Length: 428
Ligand code: SF4
Ligand code: SF4
Image 1: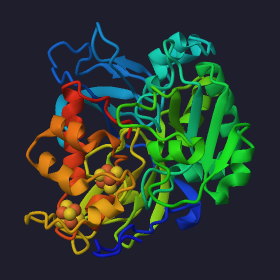
Image 2: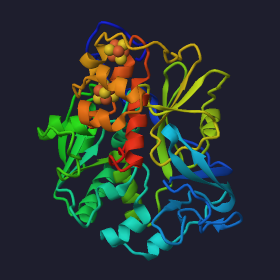
Image 3: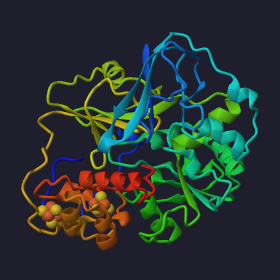
């Protein structure tokens, strides 16, 4: 369990949570909300050329094109009326178009996907399925030019106190097996590797994929560390995973692909691990776009002034500032921290103790990196101290005795570089 930053221990020994840590080891369904908010990350936050309007009627699973001339779209997860369209700024200044829907209690399903047939060609799949639950952007693995030769399905989770993918592996082994078949057909990839912790080996072996078991030591399940661990292929800072012909997808996204092809319906729900103030884990299934408040209410979790809400886990999660925030298609976890557990960021400068350097799995000179990042020198951070080798684990912030929000500076730097074309933004 995460308690507090510590000093003098070098590399922390942390273990991912597992299905056994989830209350009742089952999934709780959250009732559909009367208000759904869909958010699309859009570098062009301009609302002037949108093709959607307030008052438009939408059906569940309907593809909502944001602009006439672009590939930007949302998938409606409810049946109802659009009541608001606005521009929202998220973590590290990311720009979103946000569409609110007043939802009816009964779903009327859009049939466009079903009519498009069960054709697994990328041309048929991508116009519908770029943004499915469990993956930031499916275009990272489905390509006509330079397709991957290997796909790794991650059956672990991206942070501590999260067991979203693991409960899917545990409870949906048959659906995963069907999803793997579709994944192979869509991508044309022959080698599909399924990475799981030892406790889920049996379920993974039903999938038909090549199974690799790793010990659940944090942060070994991050893509760049997995490359080294299971393919024995360290990734240099100048290379992207795509350069090496490797694509990553979560177990949840594989099941979502199966839903689209077998049921002919757009996947509209998301599994989320919710951690309460006592570090109790509950796994829920809710529609994408459900307000966080509805989920917390359903679980009887109160949030008071000063408590902190986080999307993600304790090491790499991102603070959110309102319970009205909806869950997105890549929200794996919601964490509620009591105000007494929140450790404020420090204002004092680095004392050069070296703890962050000892903890960093990418062996970065984090103490030097932070000096450049604090001053907005992002290009220099890439050139001089290998910022792009960072695997986004957050261990540096965790061990920093001065409580410098190093991880926040790193993510801000990467986001700014992505905006200026200096880097392909992380897939989360
Ligand atoms: S610099 Fe990056 S890889 Fe190194 S500890 Fe910090 S977040 Fe992890
Ligand atoms: S940033 Fe400075 S104070 Fe913080 S852990 Fe690294 S060397 Fe120590």
